[in-house]
Length: 84
Picture 1 (tube, rainbow, N blue to C red):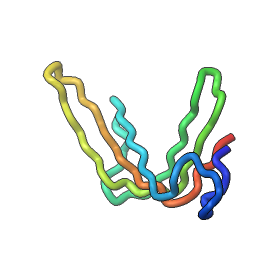
Picture 2 (picture 1 turned 90 degrees about the horizontal axis):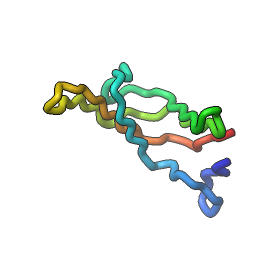
Picture 3 (picture 1 turned 30 degrees about the vertical axis):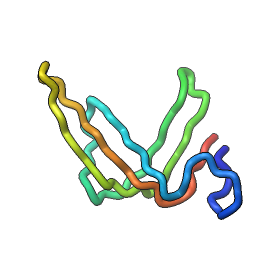
């Protein structure tokens, strides 16, 4: 789906890009961790996109005025993204 990450080849998401995930569930990672990111798009699933060996560069926990906790995780891509 995304093609090769080599210079000059078409790539929708750069190798040196980042992914930021905001969630209400604790992802269980901290800055410096390495993890895989799998995004399932659609219900039922239309696309599944995988980014392997991403590096967690920022992890933050915030609480709003109503006491709702949100987790924000930023990951640096380290290779090509694959999609089905």
